[in-house]
Length: 469
Ligand code: GLN
Image 1 (tube, rainbow, N blue to C red):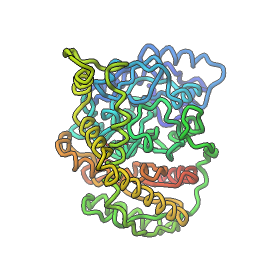
Image 2: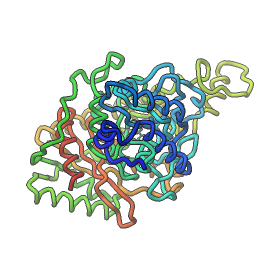
Image 3: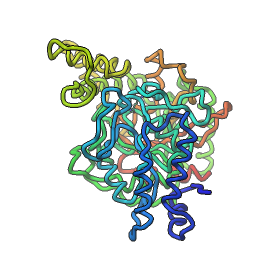
Image 4: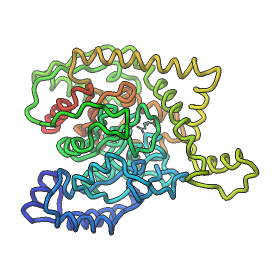
């Protein structure tokens, strides 16, 4: 019987011959088959993954991710494979090249087992905006897995792959990690190349990692991070070597406005406060910092990301690639109109319209420019906080995983659920969700820790320590 606990232990077993990559892949193929009802995978590369596993079993030089079985969010390109971003408009689109992150994991011996379901183009918080149906939460199948990387989080939680890649524009790695109970890491903006990631909000998008432990996530990050000639926004400085031991006493800030937010489940608030007390008792300095801009975070995020999305998604017109309507078009305009009307889902259309509106003449200054100014202020205030503190500690979500259908008729309620996650993307800082809490409903929820781009290694070190407790 194959069982997985960490990359390290698995790779040690590969080395001493007690297990093979083929056995691992076979195990995951069976598990995927038994858990089809979760709707995590849009496609499984069974034959190919088995072939790759067999090649790796015979490879003389194992890479850093030798034999690690990955799932890939469906908005990350893998040459010769479909990438639909869970949208009808790209349903039959095949990638012409691989994302840099994919190239890098493959170079280090990873096996990609399939494409994972997500919210269409990453737009959503519950994975209910997928054209291919929602992902169910493995802890309770009547509940959402979180989004937009719902398939990536649920697949790791349900043991359908060892780790997965997701993307995080406003919490899409951390929120599903929180709802499902796995580790979700969003690197600093630019830490991982966006080349080959289907764009949603380019100044926010970042590829992230979902895994069972901080060690596994760190091992993936080491491989995928770093400058890339194909992405001019990738950070030029390399990530320092990740050493998870030892962790020291840190200075940590938290925002009382968040922990006492009117929308937060009192139990989440209470458990976070208890954790703050424990950290203080164990010698860390944990201090409240008033954060006056809190109320502007969600509106700023939704003005700027919809603006970027309206521009990024204008390429999907059905002319060069993507869905083409069967309806007769009598001019170019109606050709675009039919393709886009039928190809995009409701939420994507809502955002394209919102984004087009905030960029339109007469409203540009009032919305887009204003939101850019708020973003600038948020960045400045965040820099000031990180001059004095190593990390910010926060909740990920005001609630635990909610019931399927509970919020998806009310976009505003859904957007407000992003209140604690979008901050990291607006400011470009690194953030991780750690599955350290359990709600009385028996559902897991996470703790969010944020750091400056310079402090990502200490962030991982401290996160590792938190997971040991
Ligand atoms: N829930 C947020 C949104 O819908 C975040 C999505 C994401 O990070 N891709 O925009």
